[in-house]
Length: 386
Image (spheres, rainbow, N blue to C red):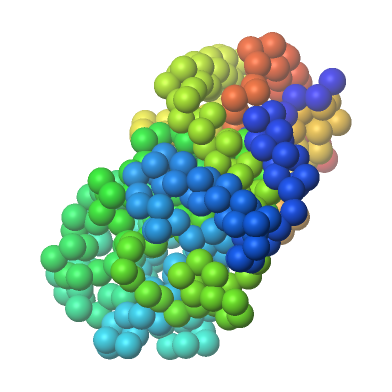
């Protein structure tokens, strides 16, 4: 038996994405070459760019393809800081619950390049404190190079007030970057409507392949590059473009757009049923961020008296895959910084699991997981007492 409940880490590739990728792999041609094969590859690639741009409410020329969401986040955070530093702005504002692909480059800039990094707190449900941000902007708005706040948290699914943040930052001329990796395809996300400066996307969270991402960067805005070479992608991300992965990214995006409402409603129903049954079967368990607006497919649950690593191993032995949080920090023995920011103790943060559902999750998988989970929790609690 195999039950995959870790779609927030990565999703199974959609058949349409696999087919698109295989078809593109059979073709010859570097998209930057001028000969017939190169022009054909470029045509396919630009069609993919237009499709993704349409899905995210941006111009095609605002899409910059990268190798991952992490690369996109690094490019945005470092590039926007360097751009702001040229005008005397040396402050970076991020939320305390950002993915490490935003936290770590921000902290690196603080350690190596003299940035002042300010982390916004969140409430007990995991939503960013807007009053704290407004006070900061009022006092130091002309010093801030950028604000980076994710669209929805990857551990709890809690949706962040990005639109409000952009409106607050506007009068001070502060650039706003948003990590949209978890929310793209799950909630409406429009680059233009939000008024963002930059937005990060990743293919493998929506049924696309691993190893391809995108940075949506406002047209006409040039930022310093991390990679130098051939000058591809507005001279911001040099390197031969991965046409097969890009075309597969677009195919997965199209399927997300075409099935958006029905798919997400079905996933939401599975999530709510899962939550209700857990709280009935394990009464002292509690769901993190339950009172907040959340993505349809993420459930973060604390099981008092357990160790999350033990739970993972016991569930894995039963054929159930889930996680303690971000897959990018798997194997790192430390409590979730997201849950700690929400007010958890280290013990409580180490007693939590993330279950995440997607397009391929079935009712039968949820039923089987719910039957197995109470016994696993009991076993983990006994192990913790020894």
